[in-house]
Length: 628
Image 1 (spheres, rainbow, N blue to C red):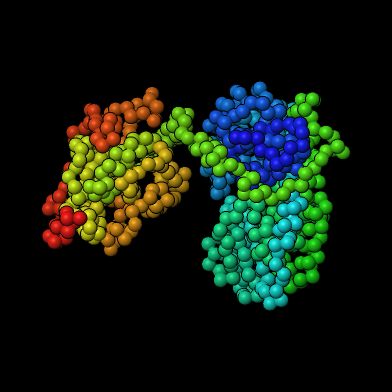
Image 2 (image 1 turned 180 degrees about the vertical axis):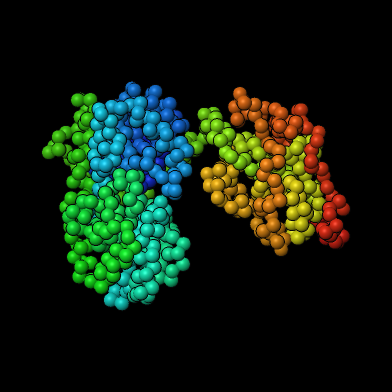
């Protein structure tokens, strides 16, 4: 990744930013890039998205939260921190994240444990945090914890205020919330109050919810949902265009939330929008200054306060303008950039230290042009390398899968005509790389089986029909297989399937992490499915197999030896005595195997062998198909 800088002011220090996020990610900009850009006269930075792209020569390295995970742990703890000046940046108390939090599975899978171990093993590593409660939580007896609160660039505020439309005299009172889906549980706390307000005022109020909502609020006639995501630089202008009269900042009182910042109140206040906040630690300053309506998480209190603000426009204006004046004077990033420079100086060698505050040149942080955000080729390469499966990833996945209480069998069905046969070899290659072993693949075709592997291997099957041009006949034929061979879930694959090794594991992973998830879940989010119109008049019958046993189904696909790597194709015995999937592609158009089971449950089947309930297609239909 090339050095990123907007201007050349002479000698500068170079900061290596170790982060999984792209240059347009809101959290990376808010916490690291914007402060560095404010110091652009003295600082330039390199983005380091993975250990493979690490470059020496930086004067210090900022390690951003998610970069410390099970995949990068060895690099961070053995190469980076012991050998270079480092600062660890974290803005959330991830150790206190509750299991019902929407992002719990993401962080618990590879990040929380790694960060806890990392901080324990490096008790003197300096940390940058957002709030005093978080600093107290992370602080070890000898750990320096530097507090740098969230601030907004002055130009971002000015641009957003210019985007706010003039208020129409006949416009309804707009009550709004903007945030991520992780705040859905917080909205649930005030849901009843909002519904009562909507019922009481009807067309006189409009509730605008951006990024998060509940099912009951979605069903309310006065609620307007904003589901289209916006990038970091367009967020404040978009919020301004909603022209809110009252802003909402509900927050449940949990150990995780007590360490959060007051950023949401700052964003609303930058637009002179009066805010209703939960009476929790992040909004203690706004409460002490009287710059927000801070109330308990009680629906009655929220309802009463909403009524008061709706009925008193003068109170709304006074509160909003006072909050804006405070943010303008005390919460702009440029006015605090010197504090960030002082934090960097704590780890820089003396000869590299930045000037004292009175000698610093602070640069205004501006909204960048698209060309200045990133080089597309470099960005794609970084993305690709971050997501390349490493041997360590396969081992982690294998250990995790062994802990799953249920490992469902997934039946993959592909419809292929003769012209599709060259593509099947690529699908075979892709399926061989899948880390999840419990799958079977059935090809439905109007041609004879091209290779004996489909008759010999117990995880492969070939269903030969006279034609694929009769959707209802094809659907009935496939449905006839489901009671015996449907497994726990069925997915449609195109003739050419080329995907990541973890693709087949996504569905069982969702079932393992969400035990109450219905087994009839659609597979379109996991695999690209054949259009429903191609499955006849009852396409929904191609899906979950309700008659399949989840306890007696034998394993299918790869079953590696305990000592082998999961990416290898090693022949081994399964509990039922068969020898699954030791196939290897020796020729692009042919597949050869060794030591395959001879007790395959699949055999080629013509339409004459189908159950009596499935009629044969008309002779003229067959002739047209063969002529085609």
